[in-house]
Image (cartoon, rainbow over all chains, first blue to last red):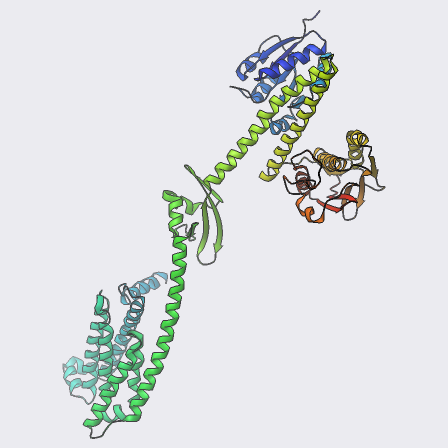
Length: 121
Length: 518
């Protein structure tokens, strides 16, 4: 039996972190959440075990930019990366790289369904 | 060959040199005097050489040369006259090379005197006052307004008349009135032509002075750089804008030059025979404002979106989890208002990007039919809520796929159809897709709403205007939708037209290039 999947939340806005946690709790699957509230912590975390199943990644973060974390995560993990950003221009640039790009503000219930789908895989 | 020319030019520059004077007319006259004196020096030299030409080398060697020459008939006058002429011309020329201040007229007056004396002694007395050489008096009269103020033509004429009269009286005659009258007539003509020249030059100088004053006082910098990259003209504004960077600016060919704490905008023009000229402007403030605007845009984009996501997200969850119908309903209202704010933020961002010219369209394949169906699915419910008939019609022969940015086309359609539904209370909203000749296609959105008064039609595509504010109903939106739609359509190489009649309805027609993806 495998350990419960880890969802890594890299987001500097505490309210959004809380929103993600609530949405994940509503998904109805047993997951462990790891939260990094700045870029530096996020960068360190993606280079460490256990490998997250899913990474929710903000782009503009303190200390280290999300793009750098994205590259590190790509190099070190096989995690599904969902870029969630308020910067629509940066989001457009990420479209070709990231697995999924979601722009803020998003439809929370649709996002919940989307998370559920990703974790169900 | 070229070095010889260079030396000749240097020699001419040296020979024709005159010092600068405060009065530009005096400078011009003295420059002419320098040329006349050099020319006459040459003439005197030629006369001297011609005089000694007849005397052979053997006579020269036997030592009797000068003696024979001075004894010969006529040779003596020519030789001594030539020597005296050269001496006086050299004196005039040498004097003319000095800064003379208030005595600037002196070399010219000496020249005129010498020429008059020379003329008086140039022929037999009777010939010079009443015969073949009478016309020689024209020389000092015509020369006077060239090297002295124009009125001196009359002075020269008076001096010549006095000389003629004196000689004439000494020969036992009285006054030669006809000749004197003729000399004054010549003086009058000379005076007139000199005056005409002086007037023209003065007008020219005034013009140039005016241009100079304008150049000195204009707020924009003017910089003229020759082909070698040397600054030819830099007005005070240019000097104050560029400061120590003048030389660097002269080498700059771009439209912008960033200097420490300053941004300067150049508009260059090539001027034939001169080089390059630029009008330059300090746009530091403007650039700062642009940057502040970009920063504001970033703030709007990022700092508004993140809290909106939280507000909307939690409201949705409350709506989902609440058992209380009222609370669910209110949460729904929060969610729908977050949606409105999101739309506004998107519109502001689009508008700013379009204005900044940074909005990029993606290129891909678009199916008009699918676009139409998507719009029907998206907005059909809204039309139904208002009991409107919503017709979507794809005409036969509409291309199956066209080239374009699907997302932006969708945005234009949502805006036009959404507006039509919003501003129509009863009747029909219809969307038509159709083929067009000349590699084009198009769609139209028409409604049976209130219509837009003709006077307001030109304004409806302007940002932050709403064609609907004549109506008593309150309507939502910042009035950016139509402006953005029009600009997006134009970015796509298309055009948008509107026809409307109050009480009948409004039709928007969009024409787009086909650019069918092969």
